[in-house]
Length: 177
Image 1: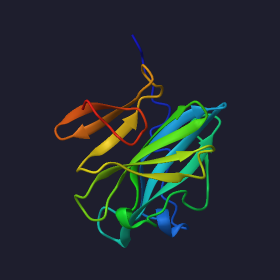
Image 2: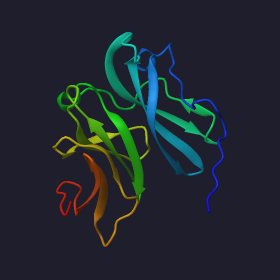
Image 3: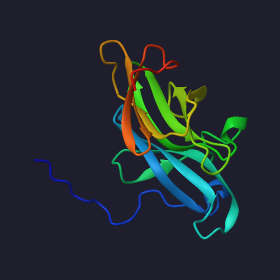
Image 4: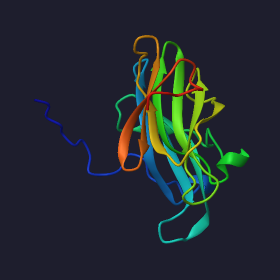
């Protein structure tokens, strides 16, 4: 049996009013433990749930911690809404490391209810290269399994109302959903 213990009753990342890109909300974090540190990629927005602040654009920020509670954050986002297919910005990151590459699946969209699974890669968790849309269909919350299985990449994804598995040889073509 596993027993979990809450270490703090406060959220770890809070909005920073001095950073317009994350002034209203910080949420939906992805975390990975690598090289003795906890690395967190978090979704941030400039508009609060009450509709105040900015035009509701998502961005992804980066934070790092030695203990998983106290984080140091970068001043600027690591992934913006600077591509046409992601006008509302990236959201819902999920990170794994396979070999020496970090893979981040995230949701990208152009307008409300437009969700596509996208993929970005990095060698250092700060500089990301967008790969493209992975599943061009309404879909959210995808993640790669953290190791290949029988030489294939395995992805968990959500086609409402279920969780699905899919397989790929190249991270481009997905089959056996």
